[in-house]
Figure 1 (cartoon, rainbow over the protein chains, first blue to last red):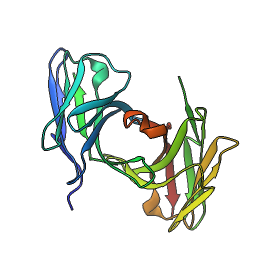
Figure 2: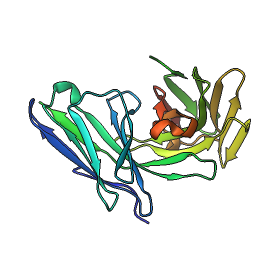
Figure 3: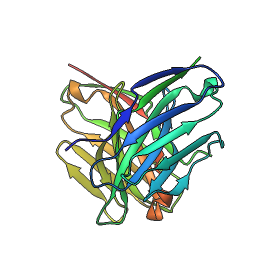
Figure 4: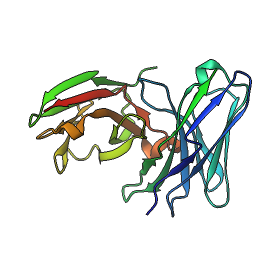
Length: 115
Length: 114
């Protein structure tokens, strides 16, 4: 089975521009979460979507937005890019365990560089 | 606010040795504790996870030990191999995952010397 896929792999933008990152979850998974990972740190939660609805939001500015489509794929949008937005953006697809927890599987990430 | 402390920041172990990574958390509402392994340029991969009603869980060479009263848990890698060299993250989630939010530790960079 294919894992979580993300596109593009790498992206270079300049300050003030807009970027759209894409994610396809594992087949059968209905939930997608987005994380930002700055070099040398652990991932930081941005959003979670389940059945096209936002179920959770991290401490990120309104420049960050996301959506989920009927096929459960998702997009993360970032407006007015800042240098500090340079990071690895990770998408995680999840399934509910028998214990009621979301077991999250990560994609390879999109490396965003803002110049 | 910092809700989790992971240690050590880096670790060097000889091949065949035991690697031990520790995490301490503050929020008692956490009830799901996964460990992730991340190689450079890759996304984190789920290694093993535990719930607080279990004190220990073993999968192959990887074992999680959990001390609920101390709010600490640790990852033990037995018979460490050079291929285990990676960054390891502990993570936490609250009751019903609070919307799918995993809170990650700062990471431990493990290097296994041949």
